[in-house]
Image 1 (cartoon, rainbow, N blue to C red):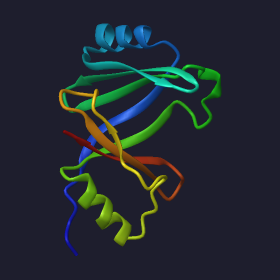
Image 2: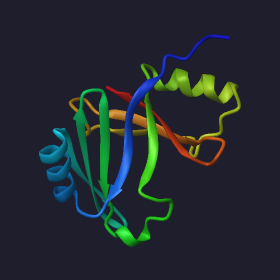
Image 3: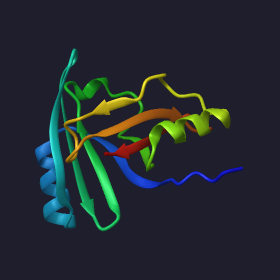
Length: 133
């Protein structure tokens, strides 16, 4: 069986205030802000920031309504892939069921955008494959 070329890309963390969290991680733990953006959704504005220290990247997510967060503070582990469509097809062949059929494309994230899709692990943990374009 052909091996997948997967490496860790980031861990998603839900926080109450994005600016407070950026300041804490950057000032206290020497993380560097890599990218920050806002997403308009029907529920309101979601603020997202990626911070990095060495090989560790954290995606900070401030929801429009923090009280509606149900699964806990850590949301997902994302795995970096080179060709998301090919990896998705291979994972489907291995029995992975994705949470949607469509890959999400975020053209305003990172320099040229990214694509991602979610699935669940054996204990219902959120897992993501992510291609940074």
